[in-house]
Length: 375
Ligand code: FA5
Image (cartoon, rainbow, N blue to C red):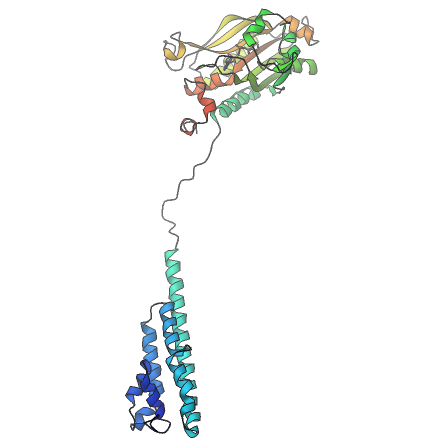
């Protein structure tokens, strides 16, 4: 009896009194039978109250462990059921089990509430505010040289020209000989290059594509040939040893220098704007006769003269001329029947004029500060 001082099944109150919130026992001291029958309800109410106070799932878990865990208060009571006299054990056991189920239900209900609250908090925190300004995505863009090249191609395509291409590694015969520059010709000095073998080289200009075209097509011919060219050249602000050219070739009956002037003046007006004026200065190329250099008025000073144009007011943009009769003959075209004109321009130089860039090396440096100025 000393174990269960309250006596009878109400001795459960004695156990309850032993611990924590289940001090429900405290509410039913031995002898107060009417209270004793309510101890489970009181324990339940207390847990419900403590549950309500929990603010997180981890706090709730702590409470569960304290109550229903292996070392929990209710578990301890259940273990001590065996100490009760057998006639009270069944009833007390039923009550404790019922209490256990009620407590589990209370904990589960609270867990649901806390889980929902946690989800709501997360949703709130992760909410996308569509009214916030977006991050600017940096989009790449075409290199100014590509843009210039495409611009040149578009103009000539609109004038009815086709685009043709030739190899960068070329035969000496196409790069020089067929262009009226046999071995030892002094004009070869103007186009010193890198030789692969004695007869094979990196082309110094796109003019060999003229030869390839005239050998494979019959007039009328109206083509441009863009591509990379190479020269053994001292590099400076306007000279590279690798650069782009666009070659042009027209061959047909009755083609004259007037046609050349007309086409190239149209090109300059389209490429640089109608306010730029042009002039043709006599020049020399072994593969054209007559030959000229086309000049455009300087865009920086409007033709007044500045450091950008060497104080001349003019900038040279291409070499040109009427196709030399010997070149036509070298390609199997009768110069008595057909005539033509040709031109060759440097794409970097055109881009420099178009964007007022004073230094040709900038195109190859890949400096993003430079490149992003030409979106
Ligand atoms: C020629 O290359 C001739 N084949 C052009 C030609 C074609 C004339 C058809 C007549 C008929 P030239 O060496 O001048 O010509 O070069 C033509 C253009 O290429 C020059 O006007 C210039 O714009 C560009 N150029 C020449 N050398 C360089 C270089 N080192 N770096 C950058 N651009 C260059």
